[in-house]
Image (cartoon, rainbow, N blue to C red; front, side, top):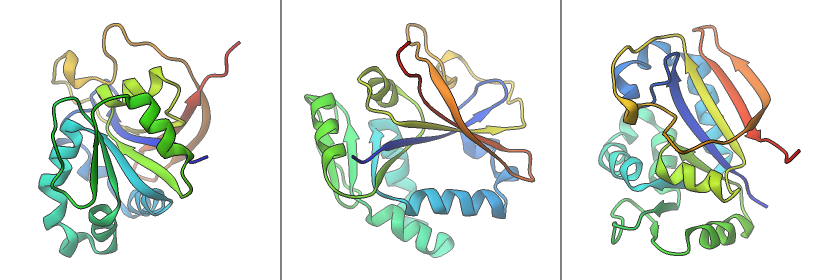
Length: 186
């Protein structure tokens, strides 16, 4: 069965929003290679509406500067979990509006490589709540952003989950990628 792997940038103070404002100083050759390896180990993307719309706006014009990474982002099949979006305009996009858990479970059972999700929002919480998220890879950046409100943080009131640490990778820039898997029931 395919895994769903979430990849999220996070600051020391828990901020996950607007990573373009605080991560670029840390995206060195090691981080680029790790990101590339992760992307190319997957053959589909899954996203919530907000992440999808942001990526759909940015990525189609980034192939020239990002090469095969950008080509891969633009050509992978995409699944969007949204109750409000009608259809996607970025490449091969399927919008999942109803029976989300059932549909995602069906996609995971299809043959293929793993499925990648960027960012952590309502769609991610839905995946966690239904036992569909297999790995959470937090790219912990050695920076305190110092701004933002509750909506900019990884956590949200009323959402709780337990994970076990599976692996850590440390880059020379100080970024630590901590891979977590849902905790086994005890």
